[in-house]
Length: 113
Image 1 (cartoon, rainbow, N blue to C red):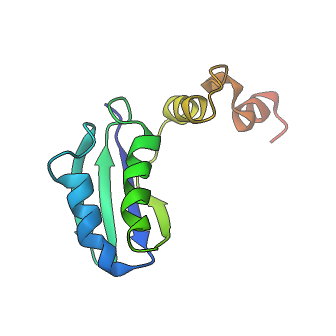
Image 2 (image 1 turned 180 degrees about the vertical axis):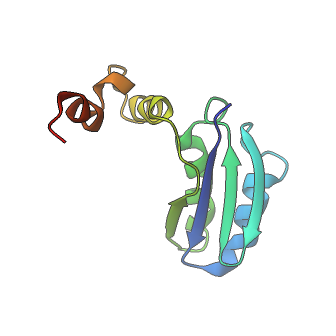
Image 3 (image 1 turned 90 degrees about the horizontal axis):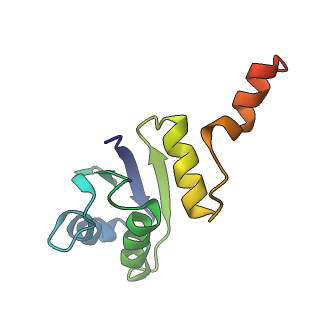
């Protein structure tokens, strides 16, 4: 398991308890490993092989809609290129996205960067 760790900063601080319950309580997405409150954010760690990014962020956004709030997120983990390619392929419905097709890596290999 390569976890994703993400801090979610809601524009409405009163949404923090609801986010904590939705992501950490009964009925939470299956892949959620931990949820903790940190001042003005919720830090969520999850296994993307068990709960897709779309699902976890969908839960966050559904809760925030109840407060007419927006969010800012900060990635706290450093996902591998393989995981980034997998997430991009899933979210964009483009299965041909693969680590060996990441532009930055191709440029590095060619010596252009």
